[in-house]
Figure (cartoon, rainbow, N blue to C red):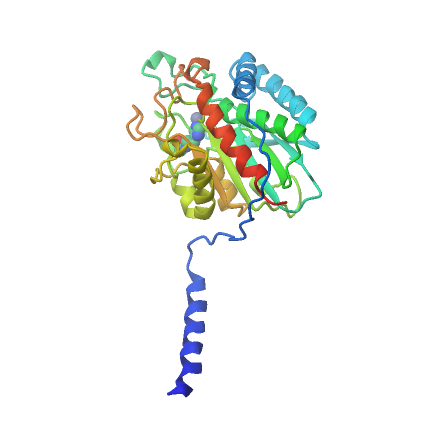
Length: 333
Ligand code: AHN
Ligand code: ZN
């Protein structure tokens, strides 16, 4: 009987290898371990002020003066906090044939460290309020307080903290441009095409550094909604389930479990999709999802003229910012 054992072992090894051809994305499972460290407090008032500042330029619609002024401001403020800031200027074709000029802004900390985390949000705002209940508003550009500015505001405040207390891990904060220029609701012919996330698609195909790698990425989108429910978004679970678990565990440990329910959300074609699919960096999306909202997915004021400062809740910024700071500072460099 003993002589069978090597054969059984051989068959087992063979079976292991034959599974390798499956198409399911395989997450790189080199999770880093946690360290004991004093994590600075996240200042939600400061994050709020950064959102207010972005909105002060007017809607950050590609091609507008507000867009270019805001880009310069983002570059300057990130230069004051980060070790380096790179601006990636690019052109992309929109669903309607318009050629848009975009700017991805990449702020890096601890450049010498090969172990890196990538944090991101989109900084442009949508040119049309195509989900507004008033049809006469459908061609009006939105402030994008939640849809865009909230994630950027949280990450600028995080950067301010990183400048005061250096984390052990390397960090790249990327503000993607041209996320929200996707086809309007009433232009049906473009469904399924890659017209969202033009900035992240560009970056994923042309990273700011050759052979750029990060252990994982976190995207923030619509994080300023009152009483948020950050459900476990579909593509995040498909490409980076262990990172979702890590962040949701951290949120629970911090007492924010209620806002990070362990429930699956729908699949959102957002910037993280392209970072996962093209650049192969396991990236999760912390995004407020509410199947009971008027649009069936996002917050009620999504892509309406009411996505303005009034729909931002400071305590939500505090929750998300605190989770981000804890995740980053507790990573071993
Ligand atoms: C789609 O609705 C296909 N994607 C939503 C991505 C998005 C828009 N995030 C913010 N605004
Ligand atoms: Zn949007």
